[in-house]
Image (cartoon, rainbow, N blue to C red):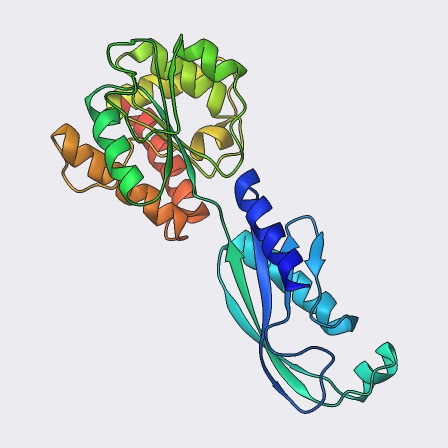
Length: 280
């Protein structure tokens, strides 16, 4: 049975689909499954394998879906009491502990722009486990020689490529093009999408101008509030290398749940205040 679960884990990683692995790690008394029994649970409730069935398996499945959403593991204790035995018809009366572990594929990072910052970011992101995709309209910059570890290097018109390309909801997207127009069009296409992370490079004034243009085009404020802009953690970065470090630090913070919805609300408030300053 575990062979089937391991095959399903491999398939999920290949597809880029998050899941959670549920494993019995300890038992006491009579239990329907032994230590090591596993079940793989997907976000939509599908499962492969079993840890014994019954109400506690349903409970573990629900906790597994929560672990996928929160990206946090947990250890759960179950008492297999008389009610469980009556429900399942099994002669149980033991206890067991179950470890629920979220499983995520290598996060997909789309770097929109292959200039100096994109080059430095791609190298660093690969080192920490991101699957890097690079897009630029200049073959001189977007090529396999400059990005030997990238999963994909695309030479194309940036706004056109972004508009027609599906990015998975678990993806991270970084807009670091060389021009205001490409930044604007890339953000116009990406802002309404559900992504793990979306960041835009630029000064506060530049970002505000882009936000003004998108707001005039009726881009929803809540979509802009999700954008990390100016991009990266504020570490006083100046050089392309330092800026890449600040961006990667923010990506890692998002990956581990250290940057979330409260930060989005603060970003929205900050940009509303900036718009007020500029109009006054």
